Image 1: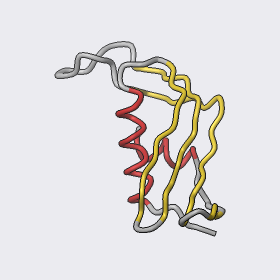
Image 2: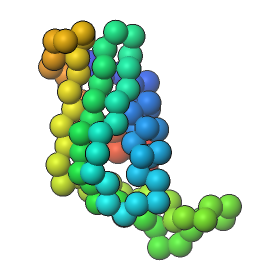
Image 3: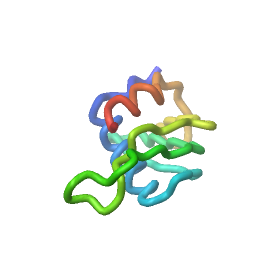
Length: 95
């Protein structure tokens, strides 16, 4: 089983936040690489934001990501390997 590192959670999270952008709903794929392993997060999310934008930001900060569906696949070459990805862990790191 492939263990998702804190650094990989950070990278996937950064890519996910960039992909969400200004949206209130997200459905798509974000991909990250850790050495020879590809990590692909496929998800559909409802994006909740704070009521008001914080100082210095034009858009209210994301306060919660509600997963409608998610799956995380890891590949080493052409072979898919099991992983211990947790959406809850990802959300706690990036929010």
